[in-house]
Structures are given as C-alpha cells and as structure tokens.
Image (cartoon, rainbow, N blue to C red):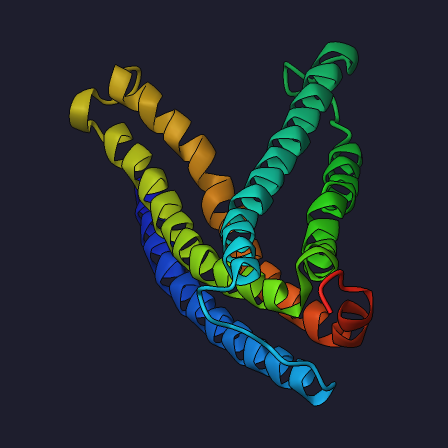
Length: 238
C-alpha cells in the first residue's frame, strides 16, 4: 500500500503537469479558431466593431467568462449523481445478495458497469447542449461581435479554471495520502476528515471538469465557425 500510494501521488503530479500542457494546447487551438471565426464573418460581408466600447462585446465577454464555471458545475454534479447511483446499487446488493457481506456471494458487477456507462452518456447531454447552443443564442441576441466576446471570455476564464482544477485536484488527493501516512494527526483526525472532503471534490476536479473544459473551448469555437452564416442571418443586430 505504501508503494502504490507513492506511485499514485507521483502519478497525480505527473498528470497535473501533462494536463497543463493539454490545456495550453487547447487554448492555442481555440485562439486560432476564434481568428478563423472572425475571418469567416468578414468574408461573409459583415463589418465588425471589436473595440471594448462596443457593449455587445462586453456582454459577450461576461457571458463567456461565466460559461466555464457553469459547465464545470454541471459536470461535477453529474459525477456526484453517478457515484451516488453506484453507492445505492452496492448497498442494494449487500442487502439482497446472500453471503456477499461474508465474501461467499457473487456480486453483480455488470449492473454497476451499466449504471456508470448510461450515466456517462445521459449526464453529458445538458453540458453538451450548453456548449453547442451558447454561441448560437449569443449570436442571435448579441450579433457576431457578441459571439467573439463570448469566445474570448470563455477562453480566458476557462484556461485559468482548467489549470486551477488540474493542480488543485491533484494536490488535494496527495494531501489526503500525506495525512494518512501519519502527518497532522493521521487517519481519523479532523485534518483527515477535511482531506477526505477535499479529495472527494478533487477527483472530479482533475479527472472530469478540468479536462472537459478543453473540449468546451474548442467546441464552441467550431460551432461558431460552422454556423457563422446562420448567426449573421438571424442576428437581431444587422
């Protein structure tokens, strides 16, 4: 256990470093896609006012800065609900499967796999729709300048949030292992209880919400480019 915990801690640190590189790569890709969206809008004959004195750009920036936090909240809640479903299923099997508590019965592993597989697909519907619909709705309400503000705002806020999640999640996981080794009171102490809570939040931080922000940033930019003509046509601001 001591050796595997040490390897796990090292893996968390290595993964946090690697995720930082992945996030930086996603940010550069999203930035290039934002430039491609601007060129696409201009090629369609539109005139863009991208100064910070344009209220549509400012509103787009605020909405875009909010989206990564909303998206992360949705994905973290999805993880919590999925984990809760598995816990309830495990408790049901302990109650109903004879001999399981004594190690003599056979658990229904397929049911647990089925629960998490269905949850992985079902729970991502709302976050996926958010990433697809946000640029379209923003384009209709605020025009193409608002979409550019949305993309830049989400890029800046999402990059910082993703890096924070990757590092904080790994740090909280390692903190729990550090305390379980006997530091700061060891297992059962108040420090250990706090570290368990931190690890519970940290796992979806570093394994779900943080990495999924990479997809959010790129997907919104791609949707904006694909539907640039639609945004121009339906926009309330011609």
